Image 1: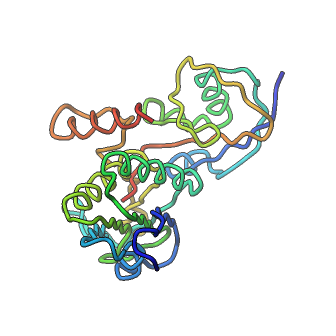
Image 2: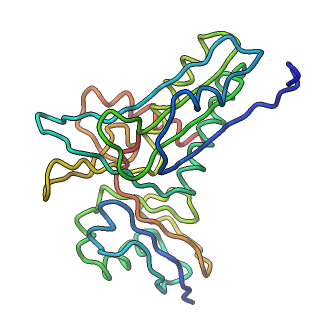
Amino acid sequence: MNEGTEEDKDIVKVTPEKLSAEEVSQMVVSPCCGAVSLFIGTTRNNFEGKNVLRLEYEAYVPMAEIEIKKICAEIRQKWPSVKHTAVYHRLGLVPVTEASVILAVSSPHRGESLEAVKYSINALKARVPIWKKEIYGEEEYSWKENKECFWVKQDKGSSLKNRQESSTDFSEK
Amino acid sequence: MSCEVLVLYFAKSAELADVRSEHISVAQRTTSEQLWEEIVSRHPRLAALRNHVLLAVRQEYIAIGDQLLLLQPGDEVAIIPPISGG
């Protein structure tokens, strides 16, 4: 591949398949980049003292892909040196400890890709139509709500700043 | 004038409506509030989601309120409960 002529890529995948950090990071490596920043969201075995047996994700897939691509476009505006981005989100049953989401961003130097990967996971939680059900037992489960979800009124407190940021981002589109 | 649109239900809204998708006939010129009320009249248990839910029309978020929509036959309308991706 010719260095310098390589096209910027935004790779988006919403899939029932198991995610591989190695595969996602390989999607964004570039000869012109000295940094790949990766975020891996994994499923946890507890919530507020309850034992979580498993998690199930569902998505409005075509709209989720559109919303993720909007986030990728915003990253390119904010950090023009970013080379490639990849956002993979898993659907269906995700056993505890496995990855539900993996984001990767490459850039020539580390600062931009580190900031961009943080921005993209926060934006994803605020506005990409994906849902998670936490299952605690045979009859006991809960549909989760992200504190970042941009239209849900929260109690004033720690999440207020995030919400304001995400509302601003949304209205800028 | 009315037209037939495809309504998609997700997560908690799919459980409350007990359906994941259906075609319904609605007024072509409608507010998002009227559209929501029409959907709730078919599935009264959805009323529990009021103040927590957004619509997506043609895959764009629309708040429930007095915004006027011009629907076309075959348009996709989705019920979007609070999200929890990531």
